[in-house]
Amino acid sequence: MSDVFDEPDDATPLTPEERDALLQSWITHRRNLNEAEADNILAATLWARRRRGRRPADLLTDAFIRTLHRAMFGKVWRWAGTYRTSERNIGVEAYRVPVEVAVLAGDARYWVEHATYAPDELAVRFHYRLVAIHPFPNGNGRHARLLADLLVMRLGGEPFSWGSGGIAETGDLRSRYIAAVRAADRNDIGPLLAFARD
Image (cartoon, rainbow, N blue to C red; front, side, top):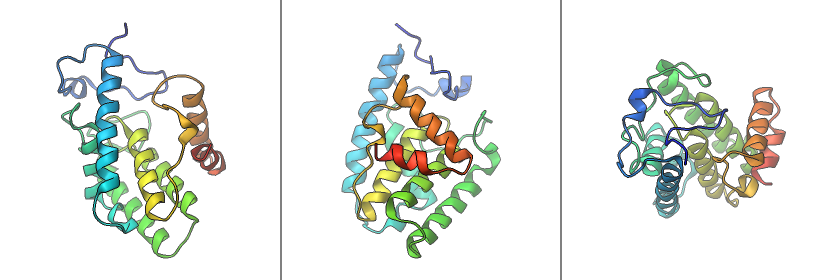
C-alpha cells in the first residue's frame, strides 16, 4: 500500500499545510484518496452538467471556476475552491493567480463572442492556459479538463475523451497528456487538441 501523499514524479507536491487540510480521516492510502476524489468529481460532473445557464460565458467567470473546483474536491480538501497561496514548480507566482484567471476568463469570453477559434480549439486553449496558471493546490488538470468539457458542450460539441482513461494515474496515458501539454508550452497546440479527441 502506498502513502496517501505519494504522487507521480511529474505531479506537484502539496505543502504540509495543504496536506493537513484533508477532511476525511478514513483516507490513509493513495488508493483511498483517489477513490474519494473520483467520487467527489463524479458528483460535481453531474451537478455541473445539470446546472442552469446555457451560455458559455456563464462558465467563464472567476466565481464559477472556483465553484467548480470546490464542487469537485470540497468533500475531500478544506482548500477546495481556494486559490493557492504557495509557490509551485509550475504555474504563475501565487500572488498573480487571481489576476491571471480573470484575464483568461475575459480572453475566453472574447474568443466565444467573436468565434476566434472552432469550439474544440477554444476549449482546449482555455484548458491549457488554466493548467499553465495552476491556480489551485491540486486537481488543476482534472478541473481544467472538466471545465473544457463543459465549455465545448455549451458551444454545441461533445465532451472530450482525453485519451479515454484516468489521466491522474501514472502510465502511458499520463505521459502522453504531459507531452501534449509540453508541446503547447512550445506554442504547438496540435498534440493537445489531438489528445483531447483521442
